[in-house]
Length: 231
Image 1 (cartoon, rainbow, N blue to C red):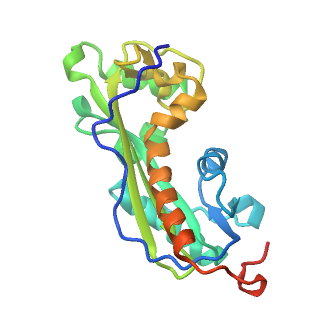
Image 2 (image 1 turned 120 degrees about the vertical axis):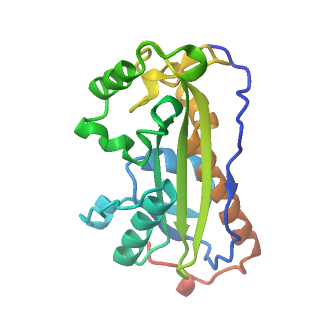
């Protein structure tokens, strides 16, 4: 695997200004299944990330949006209302140009198939005969942070590549084995985990929100114990 820096066509950026009012130690609720990645990306901040299961929450918001941003906001708002905590949620997927942007927001439930080899095989079948120059695709992640005041902060990241001609690699999850990175000459599933986190669409989006959190922490006065959220 080459270790050269991967050119990313659009860096993640905060989409709204931050007006967060925060405390020194605030539990933050993560509404997604990638909490380990979130913990790593938010490491070093005076925040304690907790998952819905750790809070005893069993609700599963219905993702009725037509964009990643809409679905991320739906999940963030639902879990924020249920938990009363600052909440981090995201929605992500793959868009394939030759398929008109599909699977898009339906990536996780495309054709009713579970994540893994069966769904990846379907994608490869849909692109049989499609030449290399028309196999472009991108991963998109839209992340939403709702702060303790109920203000929403949005960030988005993307990673561009091509749909491979065959599945390769055992790492990652989802469409990673068929998402080929020309500059690395490998699929996302063949990347070392640390490198994947560094360049991934999800890593970009969460790091953009981390910048907002850091700014808020720098601007906030030192909180007293009574002002901190319960641990």
